[in-house]
Amino acid sequence: MRRNEKKRGPRYEDEHIHTVAGYVDRPHASIVLINAGTISQEVIDQVLASAQEEQLNVALLSTDFETSYSREHYLQSLVNSNLTLLREANFLLINTEGTAGLYALLKLGELGLKLPDLHIVVAGGFMQPVGEVLGLVLLRLLEPAEVVLAQQQPDLRQLWDVSRFSVDERVPIAESATRRQMSVVTLTADTGNELSWWRRWVVNLWALAVQFQVPLPALNLILVLPLIAFFLVIIRHVIGLETFGTFAPMLLALAFLTTGLGWGLVVFAIIVGLGTGLRLALQRLRLHLVSRVAILIAVVAVSMVGLTVLGATFGVGALLHAGIFPMVIMANLIENFTNTQLERGTGEALRLTLSTLLVATCSYVGIENTGLKPLVLTFPEILIGVIGVELLLGRWRGLRLVEYLRFYDLIRQRQMQEEAINDQRSVVNKTR
Image: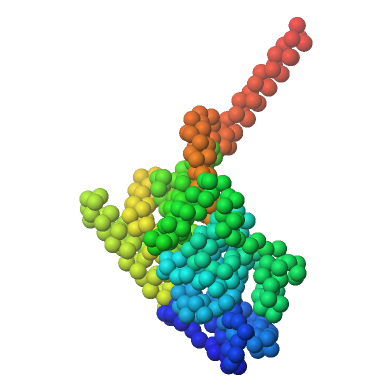
């Protein structure tokens, strides 16, 4: 048996993607295990020793990640760079957080691959309806021997044991998992037939999109935009926060979904800081608005390229997606910040900037931490309900929450005055 460690891809992926493989002369089966996250050396040694004992070829592929977008990106890189391994494998085990593993495998559907001898096990903390729809899309595209979903993220050794015993005992993966107290769902063509006509139509639609090489993660980001707009409606119309326009917080939230919140705020601060300094310098030149915005767009573009190069140089995956930040929106935001600073003061400009960031952050948290992103891909009819609620909120005529706080002192003074008048009247009545 030989052990081989190798790194693939450009330099920025060297620190994120790792491969460990072990081979035997006469293997009973070949197993590929993909893990979103580093695999400890102890687990690697145990799996390799077990594979040698059972006469199995094994490949352990792992990737580090910072955001869900990066997780999907690196897993797709793993899949694309190991197509030969996947074609020869009998079992493919993917252990990820959320739906990243399913998205990565759908990349194979874009290539038109058919893997009729492959048994696929996807483990992740996704909701069952989401896993079923995306799993059925995968089943239709790749036509594997079986697709098994485990909603929980098991221990890697447990996942390995399930596949190993499935080979040894010659039983389906689902049965091997059940014996080891692991809850799984097996997807077949009958599973798809049991769905409602609408859900079958959604499965067929996404399968058709992947066949025409339209990435589902990209479609997912498009479907997320109405949800971000919904959060914006609630924050502006119900809570009453002001922002720099309507599109700025929406597109900032979309950018945060790709870079992550922490690095997204860093990129935002760098770009706005550089742009604001330049804008104040241009103020003395008395340029036309269009010329100023054009210059700001150039500065923003150069800043994004510089941050991307820095990300590639120092291995910061989040900075590689700095180009997601919309240049025109950032330039207009810098222009609005400077104009507000000159006309209404620095405090007001900072207040609007912080409100814009707060709206974008709340939208990011509401999308990223609640599972809404894959849910809206599985149930696009959610957007109909969102539109209905927005129609109701659009007719809102009451005070916003911020206005209640703003006029609290005035309301309190009014109440105190009424109490004083009532006390005076009581004194006068007693005197009479």
